[in-house]
View 1 (spheres, rainbow, N blue to C red):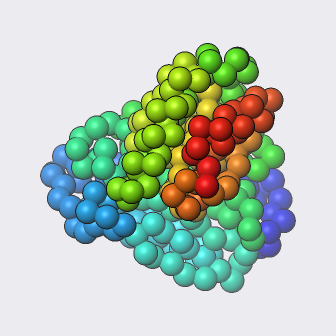
View 2: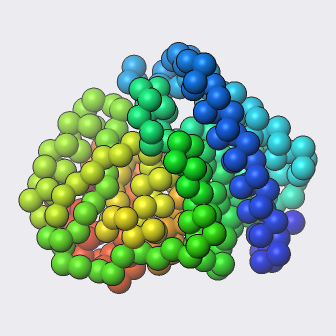
View 3: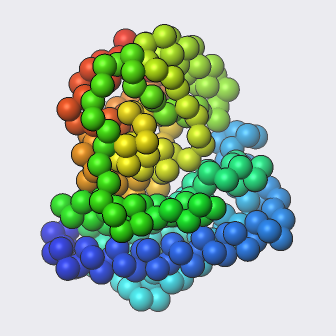
Amino acid sequence: MTGTTSDVDRDQLLALAERVAREAAAEVLRLRREGVEVAATKTSPTDVVTEVDHRSEELIRARLLEERPGDGFVGEEGESSDSSTGVTWVVDPIDGTVNFLYGIPQYAVSIAARAGEQVVAGVVLDVVKGECFTATRGGGAFLDGAPIRVRPVVPLDQRLVITGFSYERSTRVAQAQAVARLLGEVRDVRRLGSAALDLCYVGAGRTDAYVEEGLHEWDLAAGGLVAEEAGARVWQGTGVGGKRLVVAAPADGFADFAALVERVGLTG
């Protein structure tokens, strides 16, 4: 398989991703009920990973590669392998780990299939609510099988914006100062704690825009495809802390929101 997979191929990849995401989500819920402890930290003492993250990623990798043994794999918790088929799976086993750790019901399993350099299928499954966001490249975006679409564009001062903050203290402080300026220009700002779900919420019309610095490929792959296929533009640049900045908004209203992001100082 190459980076120019057919629609049939994309549907097959999506079906596999959804099936595996549902199994992983059920396992995450089961293990959450049994109790959870921090297994390690990543970029800072507040950037945690749990044993459940590891077990979810191991399950997802095993299931995907059992069915498609030549595919590549990139996982947040370090599992990786090269592809001989042109398809690579990009996985966040629990997006929103801090929410998961504290019992806040806003975290997801995110699985995307990348053909070459292009994400062609993606699933973001809300573990607690059970909502399943899906998309294929050129095939549209869906929530539990029903098509979704971005919100109609409204003036900037009526837009609800989702954001997030870095786990690195100095970057977080700079972001907070910029977001304080943003607050004076929009309806309000939310910080929900799962980038994958945040992007899907833009696609589902639950918010008007999203901006966050520090995302990795596994945070962005599936949710970004859902947002794009629902009518959003998803842009990547450099944030105030020097890391990847992601901005997502309905395509028709993207330019003025992106200009606002720059004006308040969220860009580098």
